[in-house]
Image (tube, rainbow, N blue to C red; front, side, top):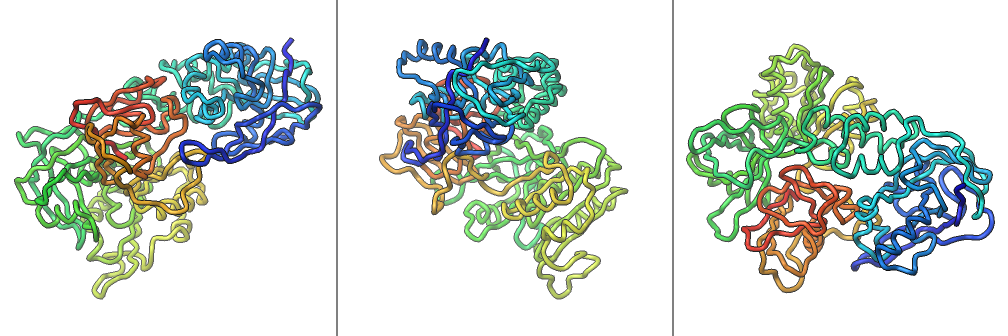
Length: 592
């Protein structure tokens, strides 16, 4: 009979870590006597990061004494005590390979249901002083698990744990944890996991993403879609290759399009509608090349690529291309990339953009028009006026070829001579209130591109209009928002910069979206640490190659891993939390 060996609680607190402050509730300590267990917490307990821990489906974390004994041997520790792994219940029994998701247990006056394995993050390693711990929990198949509180009540150490109901599919915590985090992702087992009503919504979403990838038959090349979401096919070529400028056209007063073809005239590999390419731009000023990414705005599947570049007030690369690009010149270009692309289907499509954000959704519009799509297509675009309205005639022609197309074009400051009903349909900005009033179909797939504030407010408007969050996709200009769990945003945000201290002597590392190139310093443990030292916005959680939050396109170069990730990233990508440039190489370019 399993027993409750210890009840552990702790409120979130600030902890110093690597020169920063982490707000975390991972410090738990045993308590004596009875404690009331409520729907979200045990009395006296709390979580610091509710995005990853806590909530109704993760109210109580369980870990086993047998796993404590295992880690004492593996890590050579004799100081491990209940609560050290951040768990609320330390139990004797209830092994991860025996407990199944959906099992229900009664302890004292409370009834619980198993909902998911522990989500591994860096904070359990912080608590134990063992940075590898997140990866070790998965690799050693000892994650622990979460409980949902079905009936609130008091519990106390020493009480028996009585199994009341067995989970419907008989899938253990260990099995489901490995199904997500470890290579393999057997389609039949994923389908079984999705038949467990008790499995938490987050894990259900991950299993659905895995199932979609296995149905497409490309799970191996796609990495772990359950952790990263949508994944693109592998890049058509490694690194950068020269492409020739064969056409130049002004699209508006500030946007210039360049047509790029292979120097030998061969057909370029097809890109997905919505993807981007990254180019190295060598200016007349000397020094290293400027590295910039541009969405493909032309017809996917054409012999050539088309990029459209907006001249920015202080943009060195855009200014150079606007002033010096000539037919016959060459650009070094990386293969098309990106997970923002048109998904096949029969339902309605909503394409929303402002300014030059029209570039990726224009490629989607080309695809729909070329295929003679019968889908209901909504084109919503915002510009200042006709002079600053790129692709105006082109988009009208494409929309005219679609039998079920609707469009609204908003001019925030129409100029004299701009014709309402011809050049534009609405005066004023494309705002969330106006989007909400359009009567968009709730079953639509929506694609957004523009500045971050625009996309945040527009996304909220689409959700308020009843669209499924999973079907609202966006492409951001510049760097993505950082994910640094438990660490708040700094009071002031610095632009990316060279790191402090002596410069490195290793291969160059280029952060393409941040416009920064830095020589590698062997004193850094990972590319992630280098990015942090440069104030480049980063995204991470486990920092040991498990969660894939840090996965991003490796545009060129080669990296080495230490430790090896639990599952490799998708082909052409890198996990920057546990990788470094390979010495003696030309360097790496990251889409960061």
